[in-house]
Image (cartoon, rainbow, N blue to C red; front, side):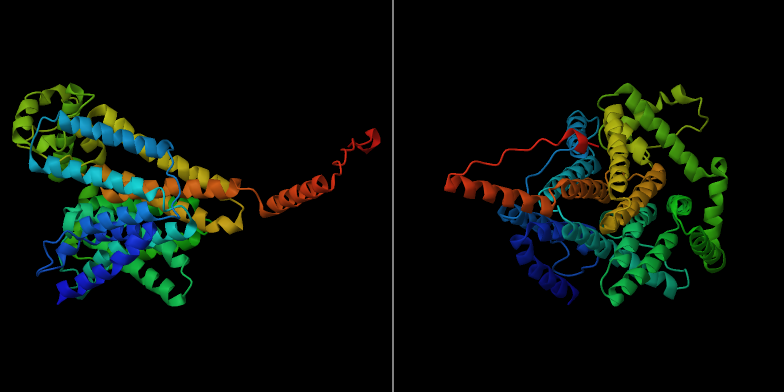
Length: 462
């Protein structure tokens, strides 16, 4: 029954995707984030809904007469450059494990999605629609897991759906969309919709905590500190942080608190030291192949691991035990470094820096403009999202996570929209030009000469 209901709902969305390119992009994003195969158990479980959504979106975009010409800015150039670097690294890869092919396929599809966003997501309504789509897609996972966690009084173990990986990656994925969910809650026209968004924000915050992810907790703390530093209502932010802190102390299981306590003693934490060993191994690959890296997930291949483990003593100035076997990267920075070399890392960091710079420009353009408050607020929410990803991602293998590239592209689109609208001729100026042209045309038809311009008198000059 569940498979049938979802399939009917999905089929009903396809005509909208074919009729309007923006709707197709939203369906593409939603079907990727919702990961329907994680919830379906019958005939539809093996069906590729996301592939159908992508094909429908591309057809809709190509047929959409309202689309605008795509543009190239620094962000788009860097995305294409990173895709090229990933392609070269994959071609000269040291490994042929299946995960490597999966990651290359994943980053390629993500970049294609970002490119197809450019011609159709170019105004406030469609930008808001993409944000709302992300919140609906991610919110379903967090809400359902939070409800299970509450009902079992903390006994439920989070089971990440689909491609989210382990609980740590799922915690970061949820954390990334919380700021934009707060934005959505403030900009819904109906009170019921605002309350639903705010209730969902609380549940998804609980879901982040329920993942037992220390990285997500650190990212949450970073977002809280940024809110405190930049908010004009510091007492309100402090009060909210105090309530959340009290809830963590009094309502979380003892096992959760014991796990979080290990953050303060990293050197004795075997999990953290395992991450350090992995970072060193990925650095060794990049030092050996600075322009190529080892290829996607090369350090998870036993053959590649055996080659570089013999050089592990090269980085003994960072004291750790020798790694016992292949390890995941456990860091967005070291993952991209080991996979694509220093070139790939430079492009990855440049994309992040460009995202922050675009947000700074949006704030500069919209400050003291009440009609653009929505853009300033969305930019602020997206800044918090990037902060959470940059901080929590330092200990997680999520360099190719789709939501990061979609958000940074959305930032580029938001800046493009703001700049285009602010630089557009004002309606009054256009009307004056039209009136002047009509007057000139009328005089020319009557054979009258245009009036000569009068130079101002010297005493009239300021």
